[in-house]
Amino acid sequence: MVPLSYYLFLSGLIFTIGVLGFLVRRNLLVMFMCIELMLNGVNLFLVSLARKFGSMDGQIFVFLIMTVAAAEAAVGLAIIIAFFRNKKSANVDDLNLMKW
Image (cartoon, rainbow, N blue to C red; front, side):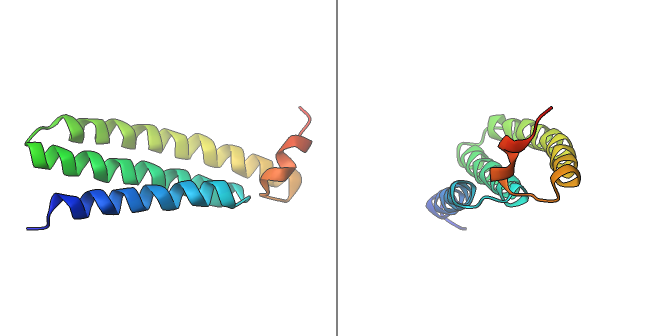
């Protein structure tokens, strides 16, 4: 059996990689993937604690987070594709140049 601390360390590492990637990279798609990494780190944390304490609450929250992430993926990718079609770039610095 793998100890709980390994899962918690891994979830913290995944979340930290997501935060660093979001703060460092300037590409919209990479930033979007980093947000997904952060959500997956939180999901792993919640599932591991739910398993440790024998509760289903963490798994229910993971289900809700995955539902929100799927909706975010649909809307976010549509926005990114529309931006890329207009500007021919996925750089975040070009976002302030959009005039609606």
